[in-house]
Length: 470
Image (cartoon, rainbow, N blue to C red; front, side):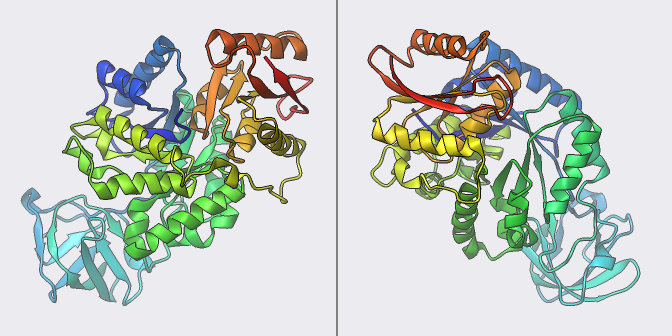
């Protein structure tokens, strides 16, 4: 069984029912809805399709709604033609709404001139082109072209040396939060997070909408790396978003940062998704490059909870093959001698909750008893997450009667969510759950299992553990 989960972005290439069904059968665990693109109407259609297929196939699927955030872009070009930026020449960037040409281009960020400083770098089109600010006036900045190229309209603009004054939640983000609440998204990803305050602002907006959706903070800014510890304290999960991170920081730092971020998230019991260009060549080719295969495997070795596909499944030619390939690579990596699950079972001294103590004790018991499986009865999924973060070799069967927990748990490493009624009391709940797992052929007579549950069916109520032979 593959333990590392797969997140895949749903778009024009993967929105047909037959394609989505094959992706689910190939190993898709979490469907990402990129709210930077498409209309709400298009997204509603895709989400309904995913939910219908989930019921049809009797398998959970989590929905991850991804906010655009404060994405800065260039404006329109004259006659929609690209502009050739020649190194050594000058070009003006303006906040005025003008068509761009070889002398001046516009930006969508109205506070651009106020925020930048002389000598700040301006990176265009994912860092392919680089400018340096020479001077600025009220609405314009004069820049020298360092690295040139053909610049098309609406391309990304990164300001790695600049402190952005824009609010972390844009008006479009607030509309998308409302939408995420309406469609009952299982997770919401926040783009361009800089501080823990940014996350709290999103949480307040969710509360205002009476939506209690777990937040995944995307680590893609230098400030987010610097503030990682405080961000981890307030989020449910994080995403190592290597695209913009690799533009705003030196690209040779990314492998080291990835390992550090994943390690710190694991220490704090925070789920982590590794993302961006993992199988990029499969957007147009049926097989990945050797470097991409190594990239996916190394993310698994680093200890990530999930690995993500973006353009490969949203707009690529081979969405099903991309999911299947990623699944095969992850499962192969987990089965190798370089991946030893028990070595990751650290005790976390900063967590003194009853749930945590029981989860860690259950993890230790599973080793001593050579358990075939771990069975967790959970309402919110918290105990299953804490157990998952110990990285047991035995699979975790997380039994819940809440549909939202059933789907959300599908992001959690090594966890197989199971939907079942709890019963009138603890003994009946455990008995019914074990019988269902036997019926599903997850367990059989003679298997030794570690069971975690609560004497009362309340959130945070996990308070007992036992070892049982079926």
